[in-house]
Every structure is written in structure tokens, then in C-alpha cells.
Length: 427
Image 1 (cartoon, rainbow, N blue to C red):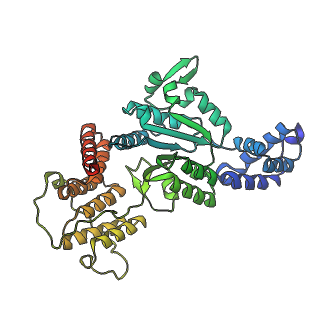
Image 2 (cartoon, rainbow, N blue to C red):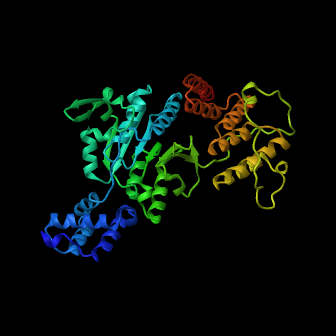
């Protein structure tokens, strides 16, 4: 149909507006030419020569709208894309799963494309020793075609691009040029159609108890969204991520978020945790500095850094404020991306009012958010020197040990945290 090969340019803005409203698409990220091709494809499929009629049909017909979306969305992925991310997330999940009485780890992959990402997570967790009942994975996408591919579990060589694809021999069977995913992995993932920008999806996930999630993968979605859609997506992610959960984004996406999120792991992990908050429990206070011998673990930590820029505003000396106030202010500074100022405040209070477990734990979290894992480890050891039952410091050390590849030490810290939590839970 030659009359359907060149859609009127006047129809393209209407299609762009529809896609922006429905899936938050920023047309500049895919280009008007791509949207024009999508409109042309739908015109030919519908047998209409008026591009405005094709767009109007999509605006009022949900099925046709979804078919237009199918022509635009980018659904390319492969197994264990960015392997270091999956290694970190697997260790994070294994640490949580080791806690006594822990409910199954809840994971969300949104969007999930053809299922490569959630299936990679399932493979990683099972190979890390988690039992099938210790985790659940929900995977959603707005593309019905992508979900059909994911549910079929059949992949071409294009889905295996890493240097190490040994997992392919363990979890797939060959059928000609196709690799078919093992049923044990397919049973771990629940695929469903879903739109992250749809408030109904978020409400249903929370109302049904499937969320909030301990781990949320939302990689390479935000970069395609308008500013307004990004804000809506962030609000959805904030609701869907558990208070102590992990949010995993694409490489370029952490700076996009505007809320109180802090880095988790190294710079190549692209994962975030919720903003630093002052500990909710009772705080151990000391009226005067107490001289203690330096523990061997902490002796390796370098001196705490001082900020180049002082805390702005006419604030009173650290010693004049309670530890609770200092912790709250340090958390606020960190969430405002002023980690150096927060560390200066904490270090001053430690010098003038004496050490406290909550203070050193806060400093460890601050160093970790800044990517200084050596100083973070030193602060967590100081926390335990003052309070050997500080389970959060034990878990933090377990994650750090796992991150540097010391599995034995990570397991030691996990077991210590488990015993501590068990004692605290005992009547």
C-alpha cells in the first residue's frame, strides 16, 4: 500500500503525545523517525491511509495502543548483563536469606524484556545455595511480545554474550540453534504484564503482599522517560522498594533519581539504598571521652577524613548537641549529597563527646556511600568494639567481605549476625 508508506508528519506529534502519556516515552530518546516507522507499520496492518486515523485508533483501542507500543519499545537484553551487578546482588540476597526466620527474598524485575534478567537472578541465587522456597521473582513488562518470549524460555545465541557462559551448559538444553531454559529456573519467575507508571500496578503489588520488594531491578528504563515520567517512576520505585531494600539501575541512571538514595556497592554496581537515617533504637551516650585500646581490626583503618567545606549555617559546636541530633543532621547532610560535611560533623562529635556505636555505624554507612570501603570497614569494626551485639554492623561487614571475595569471612559475619538476632528475639 503505497499510500501508507509515508505518514503525514503532522500525525507524529499526536503519536508522541500518546506514547508519552501512556508509557512516559521521551520521543527524543528513540527519534521521530522510529515513531514514524511505528505509525507506518500500524497503518499498513490496519489497512488505512490516514496516519491521524491510525493514531486516533490507538488512542481509543487498548489493543491497538499496545501494538503501537510494541513497535517502539527497546527490549534487547542478554543473560548476566554486567556480571558484577549479579554477583553483588546474589551476595546481598544470600546475606539476607541467612538470617533466622527470614521470609523469602522478594525480587522485582521491571521491565524484564525477554526474561534474561530475572532468569539470570534465579540462576545466580540457586547456584549461591538458596533453596527455591527462599526467594520469589516477579517480572513485568509492557510488551506482550517480550513476555511471550520470556514465558517460552527459548533463546538464540544473541542472549549469551558474556565471556563466561558456562551457566548455559548447566541450565539450558540445546534444540538445534536454540537454548531452552531449564524448568527449575522457569518455575522461580512469575511473568505478568505491568506498567511501572500505572498506579494500579503498584497498589496491587502492595495490596496482594507481593511487595514491597527486597531487590528491585529497573535497568535502562529511566533513560527513555520524560522528566515527568521519571518522577512518577521514582515515586513507584520508592513505594515498591522495602525500607532496607536494594534498587538496581542502569549504568547512567543513578544520578537521575532526585530522592534520598545513596550508592550501594562499588561504582560499577549501579545499585542504590534508601537514604541514611539515624538509628531508631536507643543510643548509647557517653558523658566524656573514654580511652580504649585500639582493636586490631580498626588499626588498619585510615584516619577519618575531614571535609574541605565546613557545614554551612550558624550551627552550634558538635558537643553542644545530643547524639540523636547529630545523627539526624548527618543523615540529612548525606541525603543532600554532602557526605564529607556529614563525616566532619560525626568526627567532631566523637572527639568532643566520646565514641558511641551508633555514631561509628553512621560513619561506616557514610564512607560506604562514598565508595571508601576500607574506612567503612574500619568504622563497622569500631562499632562492634563498643557493641558486640550490633547486628547491622555485622551484616554490613558480611556484605563488604563478600564484595571483596572473602566468602569464608562473609559467612562468619552472617552467622554472627544470625546468632545475635536470635538472642535478641528470644523471650
